[in-house]
View 1 (cartoon, rainbow, N blue to C red):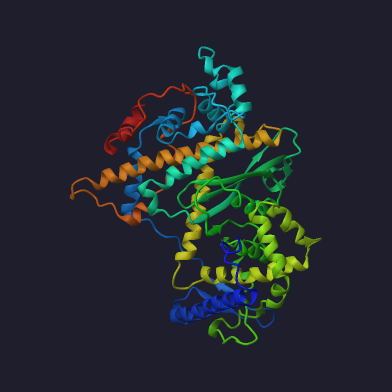
View 2: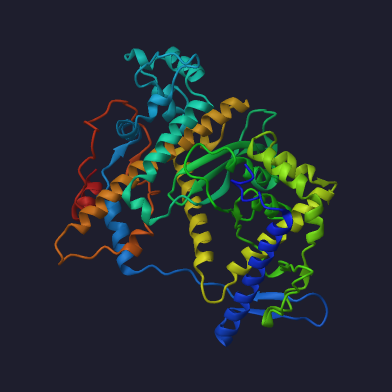
Length: 508
């Protein structure tokens, strides 16, 4: 286990390597700041009294080329129009993901169509009534209630989701978006009007009501790889690590970003020792403290224009003293013997960190400073734009989730945790099915455009890398729940002619 986390080396050797990396980052940033000169968007403000602060100009958004706007509009117009149940049938024909819903007894009993109808009912938050069909034996209320109780549960949802994650990673266009090593974790909040001990108050988001938080992890291939339902309290961000340690599928992400979450030094330390590069987006970047570290045998050299920022020294002795306990904590988290949320709360007593918590904070200050130096790089903005793009994908994913979960004004009426987890797990599964369907048709549209004669527009790789499968105008989620596949779905439906798509939509 320690070898997998690169922690098998003695603590002195391990910390010496971390100090070397941090020192190199400081030196590189100092050199780049001097190279940028007056054009640098980063400067150090040294007041008469108080600590120096970082002055960072607002970094402009990456503009959209005319070719990107054309490609985005053209591929979206080429998508076939489809009803949500038909989409699920089609994705099932590709992946067989509905076969993951087996009886709790693990028997071979199967009932047609029921998993699809229940997924639509739960994900769209519409209840059973709209999907019940008394003329169809498999769609009676008794049958649906039976499957809801014995087929729809956490392990079957995770197994079905793993099939969709794997299928998504194999679509050729996805390789332009990423390799799955970058992920974001953010929260979507729902009001729960029913009395429930599993909900919590958060006046900022629920006013005088109570609600829950759906934490979900999205990788850079636009797959939902993990999720967790927790009470909707202001401290729900402490559960982020629990999501990452219990993924449904996909490769383990190396870099994790989030938006304005709990980013204390202690959190950085826990993420770092588990092999994650924690990369949150700071709302108060100019007020952050930077840290340096040096070994007694190797005093550091000055950092030139950044010397004023390097005023805080990491206490390596504290890390060395508590290193065996830190390794035990890492082992307990990896083997799921304890929740990360409980540990992070235990590390702080009445607002003061415990000695072990202080050791994790010292360790995390190295990772935090590396992250800050990468964010403020005055020449290369690749790192910062990767973080912002991934968070934009997460926001678009939540917009699609709200569009799908439209019933009952988007409120969750399940009073018990199991029901809440099953419903939001169904929502996550349907979202992944929609993303896979849109990705395959987007890939087909790009392939078709590239096969046209040279006189037509050229499809650029940099434009393909900025496409997104999270649009939803081509999907009908309202009012048509026939649950009968309209045509064979062993392949893809014909793409629409983008020149006629707009007029066809107007006629409909």
